[in-house]
Length: 288
Image (cartoon, rainbow, N blue to C red; front, side):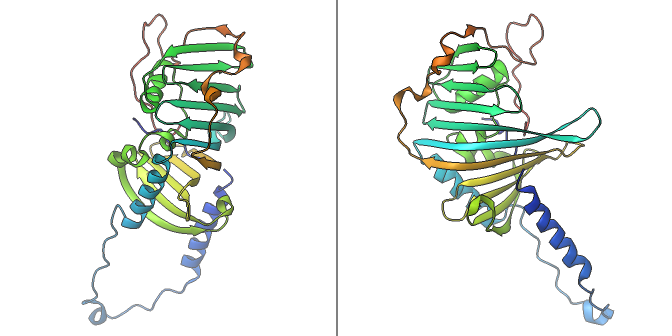
């Protein structure tokens, strides 16, 4: 399953604070007096910093294991992302989604945002997208697992969620092949109204910083920047209202009653050429 982290805005002041404090310390500390050559020639070299710091990997694995062990999951994801305006300024847009997962084959995503609202349902046999404002609905046959269904939905229609990496079967297993750098930053007592461990890492060309609950190991904030993006636009997810293994009503993964009278249309990929029989089979790039 191709990772598609989009990253995840209210946390930026905290990140900026770390950077400002670090810069202030660097500028206000008096440099040590220059030593004579005879005093420095035997100074041992600084030990190299490991690219994959063990503590960072341990925390990422622990968070993955906590999510993977749950049969049902529900949480709220508030996404903020920057998009370049015609004037060249990065404008910020936001979406809020309520997510319900039942492994291995059920998913519901209800999204409200700065664009049109949407509903997505997957019941192990089909996935359905409903646009309440336009009163349109599309349904297609789907593979029997959440991982495969998310992949199929992307290829068929470009459907892409910024929190996919959190709901796949094994988040760390998906992350591991593209992991190039990982290190522990420290702790925060602000984010998520709890103590969190902060881990930074680079995966498949995306710099990601994640705040993980020190006790429950659940992610509270994810911040991401595509390293090859010249504008360095930022993507953020604020995650809350986590419930692991809640009771989920049997009808949770069927379209809402409002969808019953909607006009049915076929799925179409936004990158599909006019008249093409099938959408292009390309992997999603990292964050949206």
